[in-house]
Length: 329
Ligand SMILES: Cc1cc2nc3c(=O)[nH]c(=O)nc-3n(C[C@H](O)[C@H](O)[C@H](O)COP(=O)(O)OP(=O)(O)OC[C@H]3O[C@@H](n4cnc5c(N)ncnc54)[C@H](O)[C@@H]3O)c2cc1C
Image (tube, rainbow, N blue to C red; front, side, top):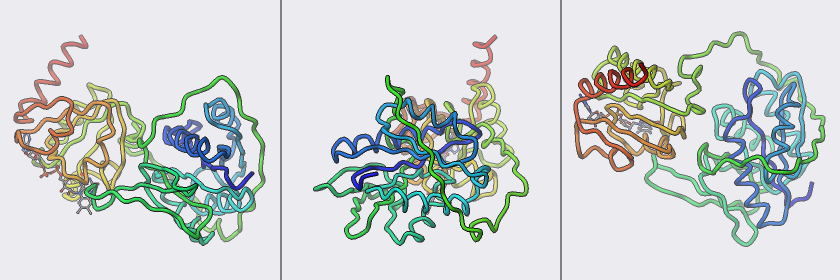
């Protein structure tokens, strides 16, 4: 690997490629084109041959590196820190893009600490300035945008926010696939997974859902989330929640959308009784279509909404459910 190459750390779950991986490839391809290096995509995990060949056909990928190890699936941060650190030392890339997913956030900072290099989290833009990587990120709950460069720290480590780049598509050629052995220190194997149970939102996969119905404080109490759940059921959507409802204990943090929750990029995001605080908007503004139901015509959510319904959600949502059910019959 040459020191102008960009390394993308692949993200997959239950044998399926995560969208953020294709988004990182777009970002890496643009940088590599400008810099003159290659895009190398690493696929850590066990039994990842299928994922590797899927990625090899993606436009912009120059090389696939498979990192097979039994300890890498199911995900635990310890072995991933060991494997990814060992891989970066071995390949010596100029920059490493990691997903700003729940798992990526879990191991990226530890990798940067172990390599003693700088990490910029949650990048929404990546450019080059005189050959140096500059990452853009949104801070202070979406109010301020910063640009950060990496003088005197290499490789540049960046976690990429989901939805920040378009997804790379399959191309006409297939990139070569090679395997690399990594060493995982016994100290990285000190924790083991005892049990895993899927949460309802997790089961639908908030971050990969095509449709999301999210509820806010306008619902008045936890029990009224039943209305959001019913609408989600009719639309075959995942259920999300605002920070205020999570703070009130109405929903679990796993459902939260926003700066301290999930960043989502569905085709449809339906916000029910959500005001549209900057911390919420930063997590869902990337949706293709935003529909907001709020009784306050001045609610900030209407500024980002493609369609807005000003009205009482306790009237609007049941009417919507009736109408959608009638259309399905
Ligand atoms: C550091 C930090 C991090 C944060 N992270 C997040 C985050 O990740 N995600 C997040 O969402 N928030 C986050 N917040 C909280 C955020 O600032 C807002 O407080 C929160 O998003 C508000 O949630 P809400 O829109 O549900 O409630 P509100 O702002 O109270 O809005 C309720 C809305 O419901 C409407 N309404 C009321 N009754 C009805 C009715 N009957 N019919 C129709 N509409 C009705 C009202 O007009 C209002 O607009 C964070 C805050 C901080 C300080």
